[in-house]
Image 1 (cartoon, rainbow, N blue to C red):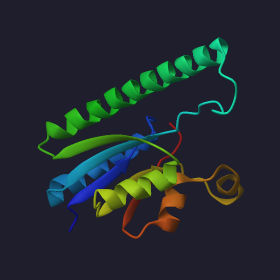
Image 2: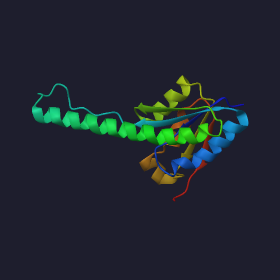
Image 3: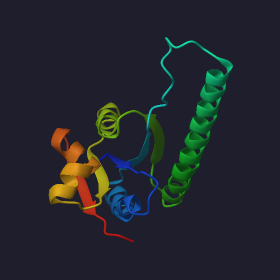
Image 4: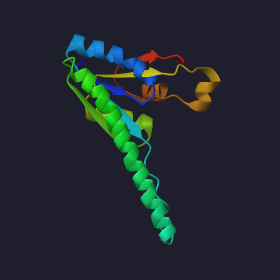
Length: 154
């Protein structure tokens, strides 16, 4: 039934509540799992501004921090990748940049994911309106099945 399962993670323990479910589905259907974490795009100062040494230093620091964060995410995803591989699951990982909901949808389409498996914070009512929900945003726009697990406070 499922050949490719996309599992978006954000590095939180709450998001990881989806992992046992994705693992069970992958084993049951002999499906490939794709771990995804989306990074906010690197913000660089307006290029039309006059470049000063202070601005250059700021850009260098931003790039250094961005690269550090990328490596941190890559290491985090590699840990989960290793756990799934030891169980015989075909698994890949991606670290992408962009708006979270749009990037999840784009990767799902690009990788032909049959299922998106995600944990939701379970907000409802006004808190969801004000704070938004990645799971709800994806659900409203995606053209394929989703497995949403409500994760509670830890």
